Structures are given as C-alpha cells and as structure tokens.
Image (cartoon, rainbow, N blue to C red; front, side, top):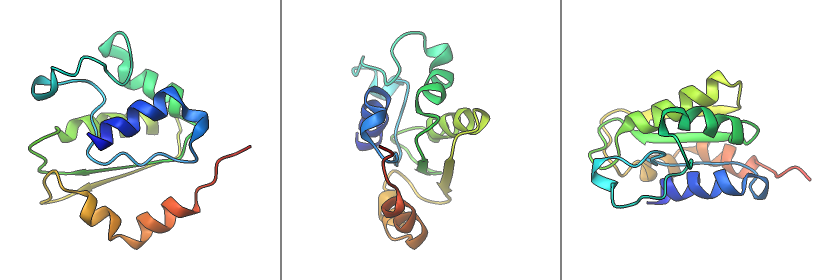
Length: 124
C-alpha cells in the first residue's frame, strides 16, 4: 500500500514534501480494498480526483503504474494524472506496458525517474 500511502500523506501534509512519486497507488477504495474505508480524499468520491488536483497541484508529481496491474486498477493512476494535468500541475505519468503490480523495479531502475526524484527540493 505504498502508493496509496504516498497519496494519503501528501494530501494531508503537502507542504512537508518536495515532490510526490506514487507507484501503483489508489486514491479511491475499490472492491478488493473496500475494507480500507479511509480514502485519500475524504468525502464525495465523485469529485475526489478534482479535489486531489486542487490540493496537490503545486507539488511536482511523477505517477508510475504497471499497465497490467492485477492488484490496483491502472485507471486509478490514469484518473489522478488526468486531473493533475487538467489543473496545470507539474505531473509526469509513466504507464509501463506489460508490467503488473511490481512497477517499482522498473521505475527505480530508470535513470530519468531517479534523476528527477533526487533533483526535487522543497520550497521554503
């Protein structure tokens, strides 16, 4: 639940972070994870992604998800990326073709992702 935890913490404490890199994370609980009632964005799920973008739009974000993820639907990351892009946020979205839930190995082996990640600085 690392990707979900990244979204959750950033949504609540955005000013504490220099950037956000959720990997295969979910924003809205779905059938397999229904037991986790604490959604990233509290309240009405119909506007959750828009609220997420409003709250995190100033935080540089790189979302990574495996296209064939059987654990967390890739649509969760697609919708988050689309909402952030629509709001004009600094967002990168990488969907890894042929990759399942374990997208982190490929992400952390990507020199561009690592360079981006370690170049981020929190504004004062």
